[in-house]
Structures are given as structure tokens and as C-alpha cells.
Length: 257
Length: 117
Image (tube, rainbow over all chains, first blue to last red; front, side, top):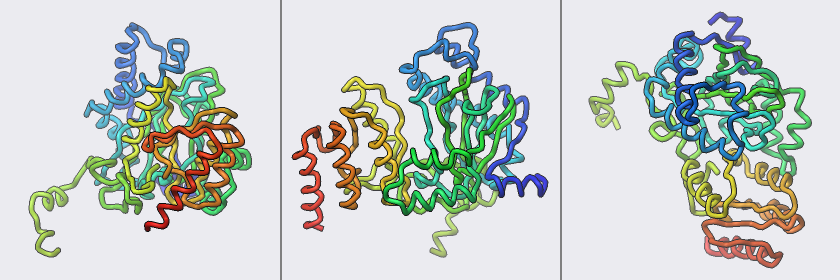
């Protein structure tokens, strides 16, 4: 990564990347194969998927696909390989990662919204990066929004201290701070989920298919909250290095503790 | 909820399992809820949710201890629910509340628990 790209990330909280073509093709194809099987159909058009399903059936289908992609070790490995060098540049190369989350947002569907939030709302680490990959071209409300770090902090202070403020007020007041991410097929973003982000009702013509996964360095700080957002329960060990494997094999730490 | 509520702590994925099962029992479509930010006690998510609810809606909480510990915020929320005639389902307490006097009982229980701390 060039210094200018790092500076862009620090200022805006995200940067765009081009995914490794073969790995991205594997991911998109896998989703389509699962979907064809579930729908018992020879052809699936991800963008026009809303013509094939009712909103009430969507979450069950999403959960089925979620389960299948997370059971497939090749899927997760292709996600990683598709953006490996950029992930290493942002959080290092000794990684743990979350499950792969899948999002399907049909046009005008109000039931699949992910309201403005930071991932540390739920006690996740401040030191993770989120890889967001759309499986269709995305623009405007079909995509996701992110708010830059300075504006996010201003809003977060209000959330922390104001006892009457509601999300509706925040969305209205800070609407112009939401930066919509336009991406073409094969592009993705890496972003700090400390920045406020989310989506709104998809007012475009096409369905959005996207996935996201968190990566963090095994040894960077975890959330301070006493909950399950820790290694083993939320983060899985992904790429441990030799010295970690060595110390996992031998109990030297028992001598000094 | 990504932190303890009352004497309970339950990882969110298991909270969803219980909620999904309850929604199925009462024949309502389950959509993944978003939790309260762990770093504040202002209950912004619950206040926002109740403010957006239409009159006569149903609100389902795993436990009454997901209501604010802060009495002032709790009373505001309870008042909103009474005004909107919201039916409150509390799964752990096996209780459905839709009358003003029953909403008041919630405060009594919070207070009694305080006596015993």
C-alpha cells in the first residue's frame, strides 16, 4: 500500500481494493451454486433475485446459505486470498477472523436493514478491519454507507451521553455525512468498523448480495466487555505463525506465570 | 444485548435462537434485531425502537432486565409503551404485559431487587 492509500484510509475509514479475480470468481460461483440448489433452478440472476423470492422467505434462505459457506473451508480461504495483501497491510499477517456474514437486500425491503452502528457497539475489538465484498455492482442505497472517523466520533459522543437522542434523529441530522460506496463487480472495501456504517432501504432496481468478514491480529487488543467476542468463540485462529505454533506446543508460559 | 442483563449473560447467537423460537410460536416473522451499544447506559436502541413502533404493537424482550436500570429512562420508556398501548412480552419471566398496573409492577420488581443487593 502506498502512503497516499494509508492516509486515505486514516482520513476516511476505508479504502477500495480490486480482489484477486480467481478467488472472487470462486466465491460468487459458490453462492450461485448453493442458490440454484436451494431454488431448484438451473439459472439464477443475483441482481434480479427479488423476482424469485418473497420477503418472508428471505431470512431462512440467507441462513441456509450462511451455514453452507461457513462450512466450506475453501470459501473462507478464497475470501482471505482474494484480499490477502491488503489485509496484511492493515492488521498484519498473523490473523484471526470472524464467520463470513451474508447480506441480501431486496429492493424496498424494510426487514433486512442494518441501522447505523459501529461493530464495537456489541463489544468487538477496536483493532479489526472489515472486508466487505458485494457480489453484484452496487451504488447508492443498494450499497452500504460509512461515516468518516471524525464525524463518527462526534455522533458517538452524542450516543454515549444523550439520554433523549434516538437513531431517527441521528439519521436525519447526519444524512449528509453518509458516504455511499459505489463498487463494480470484483471490487471491495476494507474499512474500520469503528466508523459508523450501515444501510437503508434499497431504493434501487436490483438486489444487493454482499458478504463481510472481520480480520484482526491475533495479538491486538480484544474488546474489554465481558462477552463472547473473543478468540475461540467469535474470532477463529486463521494464520498463526511459527512462534505461536511453537508456544502452543510447549508450555513455557507455565514456568513464568 | 451484548452485555449482562440482570443476573444473566447469554451470547447473542443464543439469544437469537430463543427469540426465533418464540417468534415461531406466536407466528411472527423474525428479523435479526440490533443490540444496545455496550459503552452507554442511555438505551438508545430500545428508545429508538419504541419511538418507531406503531400503536398496539407487540414488543418482545428476553427478560425484563433488558429494560434500563436507570429509573428515569425506564419510566419514560414505560410511559411510551402505555401511551402506545404496546403489549410487552418478557420471555424469561413468562409474562405478557398490556395493562398500566402491570407495567408499574416492573418498577416494583426492580426496587425489590435493589433491597436485596
